[in-house]
Length: 447
Figure 1 (cartoon, one colour):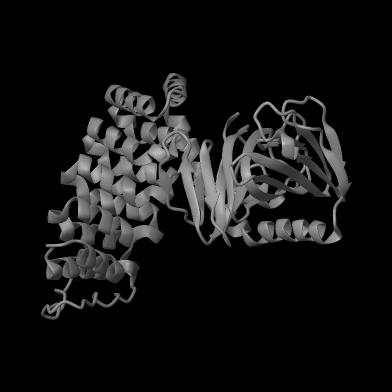
Figure 2: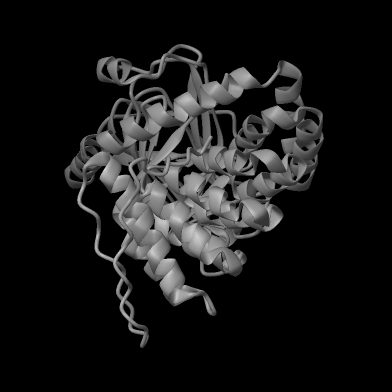
C-alpha cells in the first residue's frame, strides 16, 4: 500500500487545515489534496467535505477537530473510465482517523476483505466495513472527554470503549453511546461499555441525505482532482528509485527537518530528479511544502521553476507560499517560478504573482508578464494585485507587461485580449500595446 489521495471537495465558513508535525496552517481550497497527518478544524456554522480515493465520503461538521491519522491504499488504475465503473472499493485500503471533538457524517462503500476504517475518539472507537453513519465526540468545559456516540443509518458498525477489546455490534437504525460518568472525570476513571438505543428516524434520514449530497455534489471536483493527483503520484514514483523512496519515508518519520535534510542530500546526489524528489517529499509532509521546495531549489537552482511547479501540484493550497519561498531561494528565476506555479494553480494566479513580487519586488514587471502568460484571462487581476500590494513597483511597467503578455497569448489563440488593469493611483493612462511581431513570443512551459 501507498499513501492514498483525499480530496477536499467543498468547504463552508471557517475551516483551517494544519499539519500535526509542524502546526503550519494551510489555506483550504476546493479540490485541494489532503494527506496523512493533517488536522481539520471547523468553526461554528462551518464544515469541510472530504472524498477518499477508496470511495469514502466524509463531512467534518461545525465546531470539530478531526485528524487524518493514516490513509493507505493499494495502487489501482485511476482514470475517468474506471471511476464511472466503481460500485465498491477499488482496492484494499487502511484508514484511521481521530475525532477529538465534534461530528463527522460518513458514507463508506463496501470495503474489500482485508481493508479497514477505524474512527477513534478519546472515549472509544468504531470499526466500519460499509455503512452510512454519524460519529460524535463531546468534551466538558474543562476539556476532558464527555461522550462518544455513533448513529448508524445503514449497514453495521462495531463500537468499542477505549481500553476495551469487547466490540458491540450496532445495526442500522440503532445508536451507540459511551459516556464518562460525572464522578469519573479523572484520567484513571474506568470507561464504561457502550450502550445501544434506537436511532431516531429524523437523524437516520439526515445521515442518508448528507451522504447522498456529498457523493452527488462533490463528484466532479473529486474525479478531476483524483485523476490529476494520481497521475502526478505515478510520475513521481516512477522517477524515484526504491532506495530514494525509502530514504524519504524514513526521514519523514523523524519530522520535517529530517525530511528536508534528506531532500537536500538526494537532490545533491541526483540534481536532475530534484522536482520528483521534492514532490514526493511534499506528499509526505504537505505542511512543509514551501520549505521542501526551496531546499531542493537551492540544491538544484537550474530546475527551480520545475521544482516549484511539481511541489505545487501535490500541495496546491500552498501554491503562493511555495512560489515565494522558491523565488527567495533562487531570485534570478523569480519570474519563471511564478509563471510555472500559476500554470498548475490557475485559481491562485493573482495571489501567486503578489507573493513572488513581494519577495522579489525589483522583478515585479517580469513576474506580471510571466504569470499573465500562464493565465492570460486573469491579466488584469494579476497586475492589479502587484500594483496594489507591492510598494515601490513601477505601476505602468507592471500594467504594460501583464497586458502585452496576455495580448500575445490571446493573439496566438485567436482570443480577445482582456482590458488593461485600472488603478486608483494618479498615473497616466497606459499607452496602447505595440503591434505584436509576426512570430509571437513563445509561452513558457512550467517544465
